[in-house]
Length: 466
Image (tube, rainbow, N blue to C red):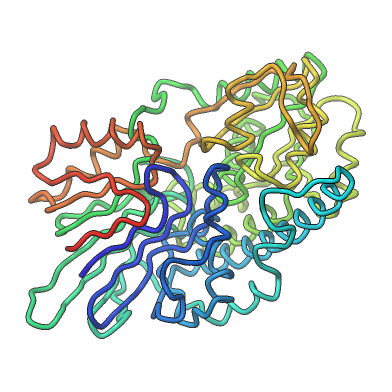
């Protein structure tokens, strides 16, 4: 058996791993690369024949884990896509949104390049279309946490709660090759955090032969002492006093719902003034409805709040904007507002319009609530440059730039070590993925002091025999 690393190696996005035996070839995740320096990989010929992949197992529905599915399908993949029920529903919504963005961005770039008389670095066609997305839908095969599913005659899989977003799973592969004892290989997916709102805690495994684990925050710790609700309230209050807007680039999946959950708590406690709160993301609105559908995936606290309030996100001043015109109208609202809009790393979507309207205003605040990958517009803004390019135009950065660390859906170093050291005995090897190079090396050094495993940081296209 071997693993081929086709993404998320010394970088955070593009999660793709081939697991291959003499008789089986499956894939864990099918994600898009989102860092600017790796975008060309989304367009490259796939290193493995997609038609020969028997199944794809999705850890969860973030685009860097599922966004490449339509491209694979268009190239010949016709196997099962196995995942949890919430992941199926969220992935379908996400992929439709992605196709629309791909088509719109391609058209916009084509027009802009024609006007400027130049050729862009990538083809002026969408990576995939809505038709490609719809062709993937019949391939989905939902499974429950804890249920063993036969993926191929040699490979069985069990999904466990990752505590990251609704329906996110850690995957345990049980591989039995002829003449060999059964081997267990664990893919962590994105490891969540303990005691976070709405979701259950990450599953802890007792044993595995090999582990492929993420370390997005492997070199740092979340600010455990940070009063997340208090800081969020302070930012809203001070921005309203200044007469500006709070623009929150929001991941439509998970982060938007957690923010609504927290904003609802602040409203219920009268800790923030009454002001319009816009969820300017049709995808986030649709995913909020998925949250309402899969209440069995909530933790005990969320179920208790649901019993008392009958709704987790019932904010009186909350407005969902669906049409483009409704989104544009936000810019003409008098007074202050809180604007939640995707995408979370500012790589596309409506948030870029809100940024262009607010980033030059000293009275407004740009508030980041999640990881910003290297090379993304969100990362650039977070580093507080003097000016930034949005939609081809240079904007001076005058707005207040803030970040809330307490809302991250990723485990910090302490929790990553807690998860990795729970295996007894230590796995033979632990592969560090979903982590920028420096963070991966920092975490690997910390992990080597605590486990007997061979800790490996793979490169793109590396193959590892297990």
